[in-house]
Length: 256
Length: 128
Image (tube, rainbow over all chains, first blue to last red; front, side, top):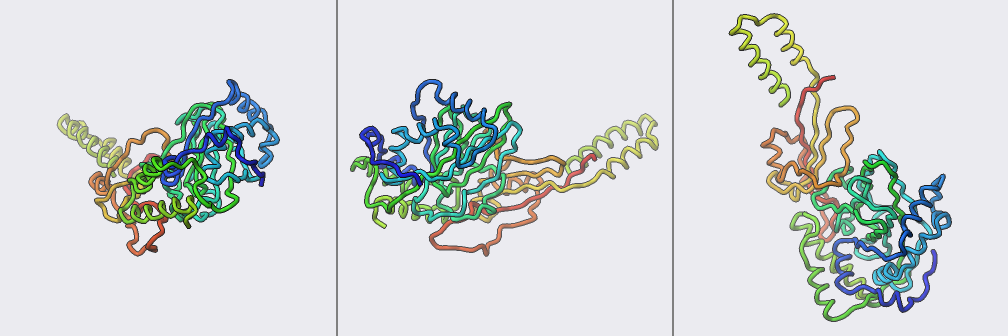
């Protein structure tokens, strides 16, 4: 584990509101575009292109610029909001390079299902190049982090009606609950697609909201938690999902 | 067997014209025999629906064609969704060969896999 420091003022200013936290509880993902100097993402992509082998957990040493992504106040503000101000970057990380012609993968979750009504770990995906439907975007299934389902029952290469294809401009950063179902998709372009996956861990159980909570935003958050399905499912599944959302929301507020 | 029916009907149209013209010959019959000798293979369609009934909404799909190299992938472009309900696939000639089990494990507060899986098939003729 790499310890993070106490929140600076610029990170404190980037803590998200209740509604954003609630939407993450419900959907299990969040996408942002942290602002970085012109040419930054192109430089990272070029450094990745130049690597002769995948260094595994050593990717941060091989491409130190990546640290700037995870140190960005907007990124840190989001992670501190969801994982607590003392969250830590895990020592495991991976550079996913999808070559042209790759067939993509199958629906899976990383590792085994964690305690899915809590939030011990968040996945961070960084894309230094523009991601289009053609060059192998990550595909996720909203709300699937609430499902205690082994990978071999997720449907293989099925297409889900409510799946989300994570496309975006160069520099897109996506966060997902560790248990979310996700898959790589085919790369039909002529260039490799880079994705850097990092893990961020909660260090201590929540004692209260670690985000910028306000009464007004809390009211909106309550309606989000009790809101409609984010993925089509049976009525009984939906009712149980509502209960799991409330459990997670309560947990994050230090109530359970 | 849609393709076989189509090809035989096409052959019949031509054969009738040949009969009228008095030109139907053994070569025409050989061509029909070849059509009927083509290998029959199984197309597989997996549909996941919100409920274990055929009139429930389809929420996930994948079709496996019995041809070498066929490898369906997760769609990244808006999918031309083939069937809104499982019954729509039946109306299009697919036959169910596996129904979702109504005795699946059940937990009162947990949720697990998404949807109820129907496996359907169509037999089709293929050129080797």
